[in-house]
Image (cartoon, each protein chain N blue to C red):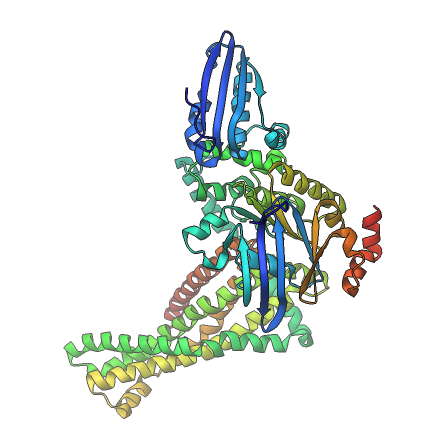
Amino acid sequence: MNAGAAPPVVICIRGLLTRIDGRVLHDNIDLDVYRGEILGVVGGSGSGKSVLLRSIVGLQTPAAGRITVLGQELRDLDGDALVRMQVRWGVLFQEGALFGDQTVAENVQVPLREHTDLPQRLMDEVASVRLSMVGLPADAAGKYPAQLSGGMRKRAGLARALALDPELLFLDEPTAGLDPIAAAEFDVLVRELQQSLHLTVFMVTHDIDTLRATTDRIAVLADRTLRIGTMASLVHDPHPWIHEYFAGVRGRAAMTG
Amino acid sequence: MVTPAPDAAAWYRLERQGGTLRVVVGGAWVRSEARRLDPLLRALDPMGCTRADVDCGGLARLDTIGAWLLLRTKRVLEHRGVTVQPINVDPEYHALVHTIDHECRAPPVTLPPRHTVAMRLERIGRGLCQAVHQGYLLIGFLGLIVFETLATVLRPRRLRVAAVVHQMEETGLNALPIVGLLSFLVGVVFAYQGADQLRRFGADVFTVNLLAVGVLRELGGLMAAIIAAGRSGSAFAAEIGTMNVNEEIDAIQIGGLNLTEVLVLPRLLGIVLTLPLLTFYSNVMGLIGGAVTCYFDLGISVPVFLHQLRGALAGGTFWVGLIKAPVFAFVIGLVGCHQGFQAGRNASSVGRHTTQAVVESIFLVIVADAVFSVLFARLGI
């Protein structure tokens, strides 16, 4: 835990080195994520944004470096300790990753069924509370993922990620594939839920409007290293990709918009 | 009353002050406490009061499930005509309580019960209808394939030769080890069982005839076909099903390409060309297996075995087994591809249709074999 006025560090990465098929994606990366903030991670296609997320939640083993989540190093955890850690975070995957053979309500109940002993009636109620919190209509509960639109699938995935009241929420490209209106609504939703549930959010995105609307800080993945700052400070970064990203046509439009 | 420590288990107590009910809640209202609280709160009796104050001052922690329990209790009381007033709510919880209270107007979903007798009966009926419908669709698919094949025959340039060769390698060459091994073992076992029976009549040497007829007419072809159904029929269904999941099928269609020409014909042609070869190979391996048994169990030397075999091969035994192979191959390829196209856009559907492809093609292969047997018997072959 940090001393002084800075809020406690929830995710702490030191010297992360990731290698996939011999290619180095992250070279000696350091990153701190503070409790209660929304951190956006951006970078070009193939720069390893999603891999960084996967490394933090333990789906990808780093070649070197330390990753500490909620005060515990993931590498040291196994069995029950790992499960206890996993219920403290929720992940929304890019396409929602809903289980196709279960209805939306059943999908949301999967973590509840696995990790709690709630009676079925209460689980039904909690599932419908979750679904309305993420802005899904009541009739979506009985539908199968294939019957939903992309935006609704993401909301349903978010409801499932939030099922166990996690402290940490990981979002992988939450607005990719959504129309601008749906994307803007999703941004507002993330911000609202972050405030009402006191979440810490780690968000991978390349949507500059989402960055502006939701994030407190931004980490840019460029040339295998991270540059961390705010929207205002990163505009002045001399790195060509970062400059192009924030000062380019879309970037300027998002700033002034 | 002693006030418990702030981080203790969730608790609540009821106090009656005139016409007002005071519900004092405290402790950690979190999901681990919900199982205990749920039935108690559901049955909460307002004791005839018309006003209720819910004092939340003692709350140490509150998560969504705890907040929902409180809000549900409030709604239950209001439904019974009680005016409910929450007091001393920590500002930290305002946003959460507001979100749930504001958003959750919909009645809770009730999932339908999953297993009743009627539902089981319905499943049986539905399964039967599906089987019939499946047969209907397969015949439609057969028609489509025949039509497209004729179209390709008229324009042979459109045939994708590289794809056909690739399929032949997949279904034929790569199947050689497993087909060879299994046919060899079946030959060994078959000759052994035959020898055991024939030895009682002193007709040891006729084991060779039994082996020749059994392997060449039936076993060799069936073994090759069943392995092809398991290896290649399943692969056809899984490949095409996964392509559907990845929208590759859509991309092929939208690109002005002919689905049947690109996906079905190479597979079908590949397996129809290779399965006869595979059957021949399976026959040879089966006979070698039988010869090994004859040598060690009956002392029949290789020259004697070959001499006896030549006698048994009269009357088209060899060709009768081989001629069935292209038909089996066509059935396996047709069913595999058809099931692939039937699969929906999720993992479990692809898996289900892959299984279905194997089961259905083995079933149809054996049915076809039976039809051949009757046919050959009538023709006196």
